Amino acid sequence: MDVLLTGGAGFIGSAVATALSSAGHTVRVLDALLPAVHPHQEPPPFPDGVEFVHGDVRDRETVERALHGMQAVCHQAAMVGLGLDFDDAPDYAGCNDLGTAVLLSAMARARVARLALASSMVVYGEGRYRCAEHGEVVPGPRRPADLDAGRFEPPCPRCGAALSPDLVDESAAADPRNVYAATKLAQEHLASAWARATAGRVFALRYHNVYGPNMPRDTPYAGVASLFRSALARGEAPRVFEDGAQRRDFVHVTDVASANLAAVGALSEQPPGHFRAYNVGSGTVHTIADMAAALAVGGPAPTVTGQYRLGDVRHITADSRRLREELDWRPQVPFATGMREFATAPLRH
Ligand SMILES: NC(=O)c1ccc[n+]([C@@H]2O[C@H](COP(=O)([O-])OP(=O)(O)OC[C@H]3O[C@@H](n4cnc5c(N)ncnc54)[C@H](O)[C@@H]3O)[C@@H](O)[C@H]2O)c1
Ligand SMILES: [Zn+2]
Image (cartoon, rainbow, N blue to C red; front, side):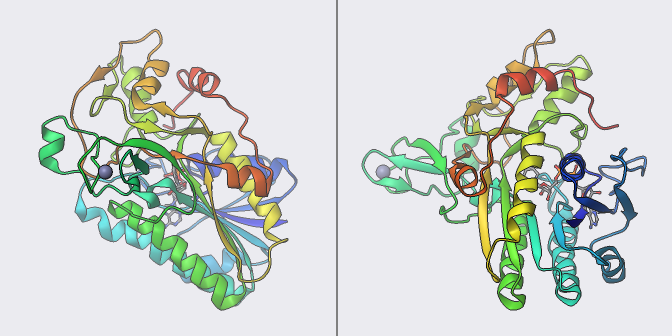
C-alpha cells in the first residue's frame, strides 16, 4: 500500500518508516523537522525507497501534495511531552489539533479513507484504581499540598482510603490532565468525527511509555526514559521524581512500529465509519525506579528526589489485550532486554 507517514522523521515515526517499508509498503514521510526535536534540521537516514517531504501538517497545500497517490495515512506528527509552561498551549493545539484537522479535510478531498492515528495513554489521565470499599473509582487530580507533603498516592475520592492500581483498558473514560493530553484526545475526537462524516476508517493507537534507540535527548518535550539516559550519558545520576513507585508500561519502539504495521494492514478490512482505539503496551508493569535502575547499570545510582510535576499522573498501566486479540499483535521486546540495549543505544543528536 502507498502510505503517507506524518512525523516520520521523529523517534517513533522513523521506526514506523522502517517497519512499513520492510513489509513492502511504499512510504512517503511528511515532517516539519520541528526545531525543538531536530536542532540540525536534518531528517534521519531512511530505508531505500522512502520518500521525504519537508513540510508542515498545518499547511493545506503541502498536505494536499503529500497525499497525492496515497491510500492510507499513518499520522505520527505531533508536539509531544509536557512542554515548558502554558505558553506552549497554542503550539500544541496548532500542531496536534489544527494539523490533524487540516490533514483529515485533505484526506476527505483526496478520498484517502484509512487512518492509523498515534494517540497516547495520556488520554486516560490517572489510570484505573480500586477501593476495597467502593470498587472501581476515578481519583481527581492530585493536590499540590499532598504532593508537597510526599503523599503521592491518590486517595479514594469517596472515602479517602488507599487504592490499588489496576490495568486500564480502552473502555476507561478519557480524563486528560495537561495540554498535551487534551490535544491528543482532541485528535481522536476529530478522527472519529471524520470517519463518521466521510465513511473513513480509523485505528487510534494509544501508546504507553515508548522507549528505544533514537529517542530524542532531554528537552522539556522528552519522555522520562530519555531524561534518565541523557543524565547517565553526562555521568550524572538519573533524578527520579516523587518516590519512584509510579507504575508505567514501557513498550519498545519496534513493538510500537509493528502495531502500526498491523493497523495499516487491517484498516482495509473495516467497515466505513469505523473508529476503534487500542492500547499499545508491553503488558508488563514496572516502576519508574525499576527503569532508572535498569538503565543505571555501571553508572551512578538513581537519586530519588521527591520533586514532582503537577501534570504527571501517579500510575498508568495498559491492558493491551484488544490489540493482541483483534489485530494479532505481539510485543517482542521484554523489559530487561530492551532496557539493557537502550542503556547504551544512541540518542538523537
Ligand atoms: N514517545 C512516547 O512515549 C509517546 C507515547 C504516546 C504517544 N506518542 C505519540 O507518538 C507520536 C510520535 O512521537 P515521538 O515520541 O516519535 O515524538 P518526536 O518528537 O520524536 O516525533 C514527532 C515528529 O513529528 C514532527 N512534527 C511535529 N509537528 C509537526 C507538524 N506540525 N507538521 C509536520 N511534522 C510535525 C516532528 O518534527 C517530529 O519529527 C506523537 O503523535 C506522540 O503524541 C508518543
Ligand atoms: Zn473508597
